[in-house]
View (cartoon, rainbow, N blue to C red):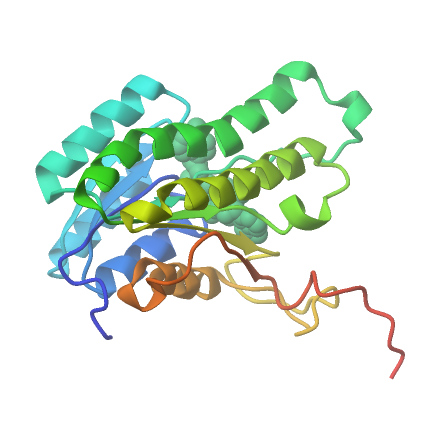
Length: 247
Ligand SMILES: NC(=O)c1ccc[n+]([C@@H]2O[C@H](COP(=O)([O-])OP(=O)(O)OC[C@H]3O[C@@H](n4cnc5c(N)ncnc54)[C@H](O)[C@@H]3O)[C@@H](O)[C@H]2O)c1
């Protein structure tokens, strides 16, 4: 694979779930040293060990993105281990298992969804920016969702948080462009471990983590140096418009 990220250092949050490990492996395959972090450190640690054993460079840590103290400490430790962070992928996310109308959602529940999905992104960006501004380079990639664009009945809190991520990222792109920093969102539709038939998309199938990782790697690479403030769907066309054709 082409090493578009040779010499770069990346940090990925929430790297232990469905999409995160595939993103980490893709960034490492393209030559980046990767700080692999998650609330639950086990998967992050075994992933980092795999990458190191395969000749790449990775370091793992437990990280709760809602803790200002942890974010500060882990980012500093990552930079000590791997060098200044060039690429931040804010991938950590939290979705309620159960769908419910908003009037039934307890305040503590929707506040936690906002805290993780929006607050976590804001804390991580806040901690990374001063270094990127000093170095006059940096790529921030925030995982939003098509829910933040179209809405998602049953998950109003998640849709609100992801819409917030998109607005926040756009504004940050405006504020940091002068320093050579790019800020973009990636908005997946339905992503599953294995692709399956999905008539809600125009491609007729659900996506897989590799579909998302490919876009993130591109946005992290010098090939995307002139791209900032965007929100890119990886949704098989789900948000283009509703299905209506009968042929
Ligand atoms: N899978 C999809 O279909 C889909 C669709 C749209 C958007 N997304 C977004 O893509 C990103 C990755 O999705 P995924 O499917 O891999 O999710 P996932 O639930 O499989 O993984 C999310 C990871 O985030 C971690 N996490 C949760 N709370 C955290 C916290 N406070 N601090 C740090 N880490 C925390 C979890 O431990 C988990 O490993 C998320 O932001 C998600 O909202 C996913």
